[in-house]
Image 1 (spheres, rainbow, N blue to C red):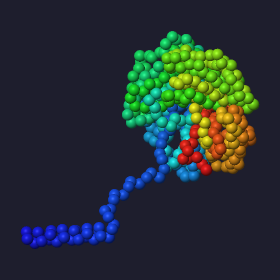
Image 2 (image 1 turned 30 degrees about the vertical axis):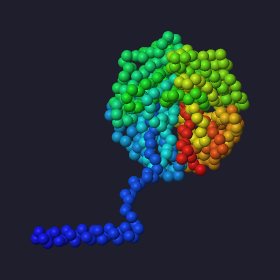
Image 3 (image 1 turned 90 degrees about the vertical axis):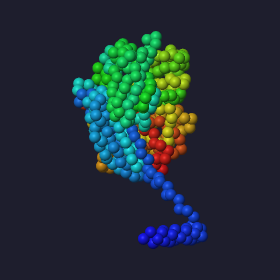
Image 4 (image 1 turned 120 degrees about the vertical axis):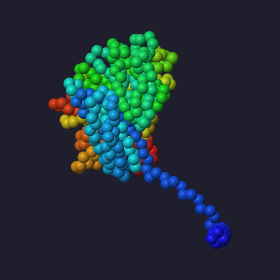
Length: 461
């Protein structure tokens, strides 16, 4: 038996050698391992630190400007265990509007997407004795350093910073407040090295830490992990506002579109640096481009924050130039007591998704197209409908250099609850929704929401 086994082994070895020789003689060569398949389409996530309160109604808006369906997974975060995710599909050229329970000041939502790209944002309608509407785009990533300029601790104002940790590891961070009157920044002891558990979200109330200050800006310095942040302002007079944080370092040129307010806009300047900051701003409108007088001779103190009033009319945009490290935001007052806020952008884009900023009928939707460049730009607008029904034909708006315009009102009023795709093949611009809704005549609430830039690879051609 042993001899027979040895003979069989020898025969197998000879057979393998012969087969290998034939394999090489044929010139085929050794077979390589197959490369791993490339992903068919990208995945990503949006982080939405919208906040909330008792009986608040928050809607997460998700729009797909692409030609193929995109799967999304939506998870709600708060102080406790995160919700079970909802898995949905966003059809091409459409928008989904998803209710998001938001009973806490620190409520947040995470939107993950797979197989394509989507834009995401939120509309929050305050309840439980509070009123107003706030709208903002969600954040496309977490960060280690955030600046949140827009805050106040004046009487009848209740302001917060919402910090969400959507990741699987804990985050450790410190909050520092910058004000107008205090001689130095404020770093409260209980806001130093705060630990936020994975998949949690928390709100930090500014008023007890800087009571009476007209301007309170916040720096979030993350020591471990990453977070996403926004401001949340609740007015005792009946309005709310929010603006997403600015991941550091902030841009040295910021474009802040808005408008249709009562002519009262505040430019908030946050200077966490050690040197006084000289800030310059241009106000772009439908007919003119002019320097903002209140900033011509002004400079901020180092380690402080300040608010400068600006007079506006109709659609407008502020183009603010500031030293490195300085962050800005725009806060506007609607024709009633509600407010709108935005931290703007440092980069004009070729294509955007503009999500609606209305919470219910009746509505007065507004859309601002700002061109801070030196050449005119032609912008084509088309709907990404949120519901079935006839869709208006696209319209094209020619925006002169250094000016701000809006589309025809008939186009905006056709589908006020639907997202809009805005594309300028030959130039760049910055859009925003600035809208009124609810109440007896549709002017009870006011909100401003910056558009969402579309990545180059996903711009519809």
